[in-house]
Length: 101
Image (cartoon, rainbow, N blue to C red; front, side, top):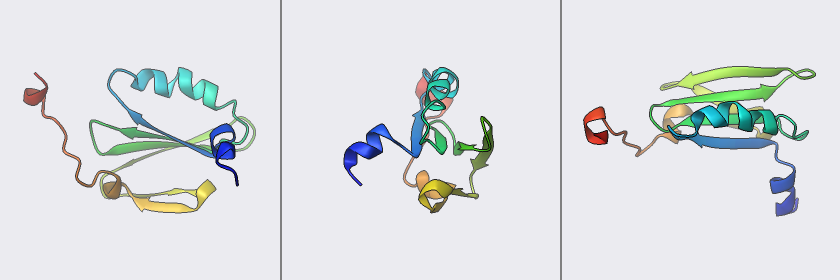
């Protein structure tokens, strides 16, 4: 496969959510992404807690939603990838509310 195919015809898109854009990523951006015929999975990785959400293309216009958190495993079927959620957050430290102020 040519690298251009991955950009123009993605099967998976992964977004790391930031506090300022997470609403846009979940709503408007996902509406756009759903129009990409090759897209099979849309993953949202939380930047403030150990959590990810996966939308997988189902039958017709249906998208299946799954949420995962610490201690759970997830699978991206379209690329045959299985991983523990904890692995994604290895060496990540979250700011406390006091640190943010």
